[in-house]
Length: 528
Image (cartoon, rainbow, N blue to C red; front, side, top):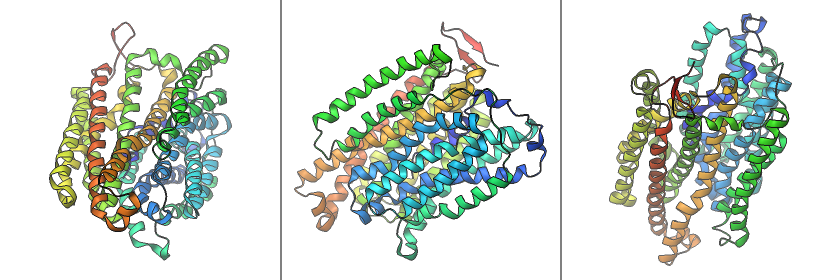
C-alpha cells in the first residue's frame, strides 16, 4: 500500500522515454527489432519494471513489522519510504541522460545489478540506519534502471508492434499495483525462516540475477548520437534543496523543532532559487540544462506540473498513514491490511482503463476534475466511517470509501500525463516526460516528510493528553494508542482533502480537450 501504484501507473511510461533525441536515433527496422530475441529482451525489461513497482508497493505493508523488529523511531520509518522516493526522483532525469550517452543496455544492466545488491543490503540490514542507507542506494539504482525500459522497447520494436507492446507494459503496471501489497502481506505474515519482513527485499535477488544474465544476452545496445551533456551541478542543487526541506520535516518532531531545522527549510528556497538561476545560465551556455525552463511558459505544462507535485504530496501522506492506522492503530495483521486494499487497487485499474478509452476523448479535462472530486467524496466517507466506528471498524466497512477513492484516482492517473504533455513542443517531449515523473516523486517524498506534522504530531498530542507515552501505550495501553492513531488518521485525511481541492482548481489550466493546448497568450491551438 503506497503511492507508487498510482504514480507508476500514470507516469512511468512517460518517464522512461526521457531522451528527446532517442525517439529516432536507432532505426526501429534495424537488426535489434528484426531479431526474434527482442521478445526475450522485452520479458527482461518488463520483469525489471515489475520488480521496481512491486518493491515500492511491497514496503509500506511491512513498515509496522520493521518498526517493531528494530524498535525504530517513526522518523526512521518515514525515511525508509521517503529516502527511496527522494533518491529515485533526484536521479531519474540523469539516469535517462546517462543511457543516451553511454548506452541504454549498459545503464540498464548497471541499474538492475545495483538494485539487486541494494535489495540484499536491505534484506540483511542490521539496524534502521543501514536500512535507510540501503533504500537510498536502491532508489538511486532504480533511477538508472527504470528510464531505460521503454527507451529500449522504443528502439527494439518497429512502429507497428509498439501498440501491442505498450499495452502489455500497461498490464504489467496494473499487475504490479495489485500484487505488490498482497505479496508484501503474505511474505511478512508467513515469517519465512524466521526472517519476518526481510523476504520482501530478498525476493528481488533471484529475479535480479536472472535479469542481469538474460539482459546481457538478449538486449541490443543503443544510444543517442547527439545526447546532451550531464548537468551534475543542477542535480546537486535540486537534491540539496529537497534534502534541506524534507530532512527537517522528518526529524523536526523528534528533535523538538530546533532552530536549525527552520533555517534549513527556509534555506531550501534560496538553494532552489539558485538552481533556477543556474539552469538559465546553463541553457544560454550549452543548451543542456537538467530542466528545460522554457517548458514552464506552456500554461498546460506548468499547471500539470503543479498537479503532479501536489498529487504526489497527497498520495505520500495517505498511503503511509493508512498503513500505520490499520496495523498499529487497529492492530490488524499485514495480511488483513493487504487484503483490505484490494478493492482500492481494482477500482484504480478499472477506472484508469475507462478514462483513457472512453471518457477523456469525450469529456476532456472534466474527467480529471471529476476524479479529484470523487477522491474527495471517498475521503470524506472514510473520515466519517473512521469517526463513526472507531477502533471497531471492519475491512468490509472500508471497502466503499476505498472503491470510491480508487475510482477517482483511476480517472486522474491514466490521462494526466497526456494532458500535461499536450502543449509541449515535440523536441522537448523527452525532457518534459522525465520532469513529470520526477516532480511527482518529489511530491511523494515531501508528502512522506509531512506525515510528521499532519499525523505523528496529532498522535503525540493525543497520547500526551491521555497521560501515556508511546512506550507505555505499547505495553499496556493499546486502546489509547489505537485511539491516538485513529484521530491522527482522520486529521491527515483532512489535509489530503485540502490538497485535492487545490488540485481540482489548478486543473482548470489543463487543456479542455485532448490534442488542444493553450498558448501563452491564451489562444487555444491544436497540437500535432
